[in-house]
Amino acid sequence: MAQVPQTFFDALAVRTWCGLALRALGRAREEIDAINVYPVADGDTGTNLYLTAESAAAAVEAVFEAHTAHELGKPALADAARAMAHGALIGARGNSGTILAQLLRGMAQVLAADSETPHTDGEGLRLALRQAADSARQAVAHPVEGTVLTVASAAADAAERTDGDCGTVARAAYDGARAALAETPGRLAVLGRAGVVDAGGRGLVAVLAALVETFTGETPRAVPVAADPEHARVAGGPEHARGAADPEHARGAAGPEHARGAGATAVTSPEIVAEVSDVPATPLDECADGPETGGPAFEVIYLLEADDTAVARLRERLDGLGESLVVVGGDGLWNVHVHVDDAGAAVEAGVEAGRPYRIRITHFGVGDVHTTGAERPPRERAQRAVVAVVPGEGLAGLYAEAGATTVLARPGEPPASGELVQAVRRAHAREVVLLPNDADLRHTAAAAAEQARAEGIRVALIPTRSAVQGIAALAVHEPERRFDEDVVQMTSAAGATRHAEVVVAERQSWTMAGICQAGDVLGLIDGDVAVIGSDVTATAESVLDRMLSAGGELVTLVLGDEAPETVADHLETRVREAYLAVDTVVYRGGRQGAVLLIGVE
Image (cartoon, rainbow, N blue to C red; front, top):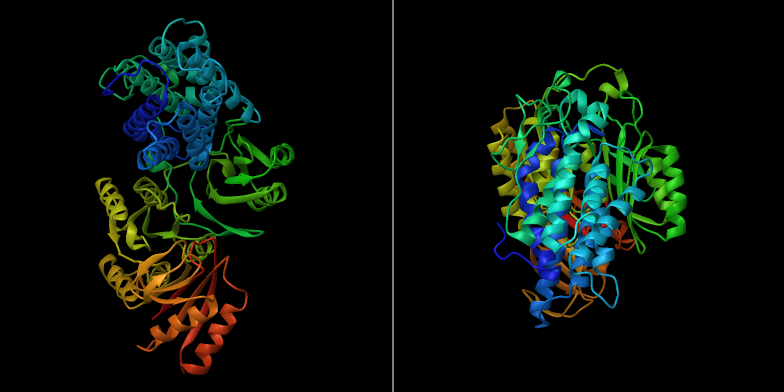
C-alpha cells in the first residue's frame, strides 16, 4: 500500500507510481513470463517489463537525488515526468518493454507540457492516458487487437468516460484495462489456444494498478492470467477471477522451461559487434496477425541517435526486412525493435539512419516451430554454461564466440541483479559459472547467483575483477570436466592474471600515485592508480613494464574506441624486444569505458 495517497499529479506522484509499478511487476514477473506466448514465446515479457520499469524508476530517483544534493527542493512535475520517460526509453527491453516506454513517453508529453493550466488533476490524467495509448499504437508498424495496445486503448476510453479526481480516473482506467485484458484470448487466436491472456497487457494492468494505489492507497483486486476457470492462475494476489477464453481450448501457458536459451552466438555488423543469445521461440507478430508458424530468426533492438526524417526512412526499410517493428522515442533519441532474418541488415539500416548503440541481437533458435512448422518440444537444458559481464561490444563478441552468454555493461551503467538473473536463465543450463568481471559487481552478482540457486540452477561465482581475468578463466573452461574441477581451474587462471587499465581522469583527485588533474592519463594496476601521465602510449608502456617486472608469459591488450591507433603496435614491439618468451594478443573492445585493458598471466 502506498504510504501517503497522492491527491494530484506532481513529481512525488510520479516517483511513487514508478516505485509501486516496479514492485507490482516484480511480484508478477514470473507469472507474466510463463504466459508469454505472443508475439514470441520466449518467456521474458515479465522480465523485460520489470527491467524497463526499473530504468524509469532509477531515472526519477536520480532527479530527486540531484535536487536534494543541490538543495533545490522538490523537482517539478515536468522534470520527473521527462526523467521517467527517458529512463524507460533507454532501458526498454523486448517488444513489451519498448511499447511500455512509449506509453510512458506519451503520458510525459501531456504531464510535462508547457501550458497555463498544469495537467495535474483528473482531466490531465485523462489526457495523458489517451496520448499514451495513441502514441504507442502509432509506434507499432502494424497494430494487432488483443495485445497490450488494445488494453491501453481500453484504459484510455474508460478514463475519458469518467469525471473526478486522479484516483477516480485511475481506477476507471484500471477497470477498463482489466476488462479488455480478460477479452484478449477471444481476440487473438494464439492466446485462446494457449488459454492465457496477453502477457504485455497483463503487465500494463499491473502498472495501472500501481497508479490506482498511488492516488487511493488501495491495492486493486488480482488479475487472472489463465482462461480456464478450473485452473486459472491469478497474479498479484489471492483473489481468483474468471477468464474469458473458451475453456475447451485452454492448454495452459508455456512455462519458462520452454523459453530459455542455450548459449550465445556472435553476430557482426559494420562498426558494432552486438550481444547475441539463443532463445528457443515461436515467433509470431505483435504487429501483424500473420501465420502462426514461420517467422524471422532474430530479434534486433538498439538505441538510435537520428533525426525524424532519417527515422521515417528507417521505418520503411525495417518494415520491409521483417516483422514486429516498433520504433519509439523522439527528440533525436529512439529505441528500435524488429524481428528479422538478416540481423546485420537491420543494424546497417540503423547505421545509415544515425548512430545505433546498445545493440542487442537475440537468436530465436534453430529447429523450432518457426522452421519446422511442428509443435515445439521442451528444450533440454545444457549441462553447463558461462555467463559473463563484459564492458564493450567487441568483448561481447569475443566472449560469445567462446560460448559464453554475455551481459553488456555500459560505461557508468552497471547491470542490475535482474539482468544477471535473466542471463543465467537465458543460458538454459543446469550449471552456470558466473563471471562479473568487475569488483564493484561482486554483491550484485552474488545476489543474482542466490536467486538463480533458488530456482534450482547450480551457480558458481568466480570473483573476476576485470574482463581480462574473465578471458583467462574462459580459456581453460572445459564443460566435460566435473563442475567443481572446472570452477577450480577457471578460478586459478583468473587469479593468476594481473589486470590493469588505462583511463583518462575526469576531475582532480587524490590517488595512490599523487594528485591527478582532469585530463591526466591514469594507469591502474589491480585497481589502484600506479602511474599518472599525459600520454596514453607512454603511460600504458610504464604500466606494462611494472606488471612484467614480476614475470609473465602472456600479455592481453583490449583496445577501447578511444585508444590511439599506434598503441597496440608500440606495446607489442616493447614486449617483443624487452621480454623474451612473452606472447601478446590484442582484441578490440569497442566502447568499454577504459582506453585500454591489460592482462598479464
